[in-house]
Image (cartoon, rainbow, N blue to C red; front, side, top):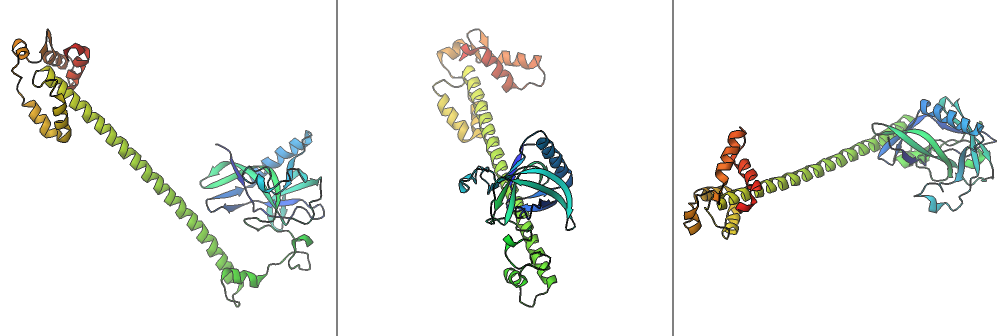
Length: 331
């Protein structure tokens, strides 16, 4: 499957706290309302083995940038293209009851406290329905604008309220206000409101996918309709041409009268065909000297009948068309 480069600006942690590794939990997240992204244990283990083997061979590891200067559509925002550090080891760990990956960073430069999250620029090469499966981390970007600020770590650079264990707490009143809940709302109501919002986003994404699929089906149907109309028009034109060729060969119409009969057949094929079939041979000098259907020594009608006799099931129109091609001099 074609690789899908999917920069995710939402797996958010600060870079490190006292040398503590960056932690990316296994999980699944919405991306831009169009699809989902999943990091699972199997692919995480494969990434850890691959990175650790590369570092053991002397490679530097996974670069850590200020932002995403290596993402083509975002590079202009980040003029500093140099790495601040390198991820040199990945381990599978459990942190706070959640399994995930611990990324050890060796820092070349001190990025200071100007960043509050990190954002892995990762690659998915598999899909599970509408979900992209992460299989590689190309780089880590330090950012301040994650799409889903779910993974904050607790340290002084985070700001905000701190508890005794050094874990940042959330401003419940601000959350209630953001969710449109009254001040007296309970934690259960807050959770319910968040779940309803997530569900609404997922339903919107599903409806958008359905609408796009319906539009694609409609466009395909229109294309097939146009192709069928063109094919029918070509078949009718070929049929008209055969009827006129036969009528000229049999001396029932003249070459000069072909254009008029062509228009008549085009305007009303059924009526024109009946009228053409009822046309009598023209009483001209050539008609008197020749048997209808003949041109010199070639009798196209007889040849067509002979062809039909040799090939049972062949229509007269098809037989006449073949002998006309074999004897272009009759025209």
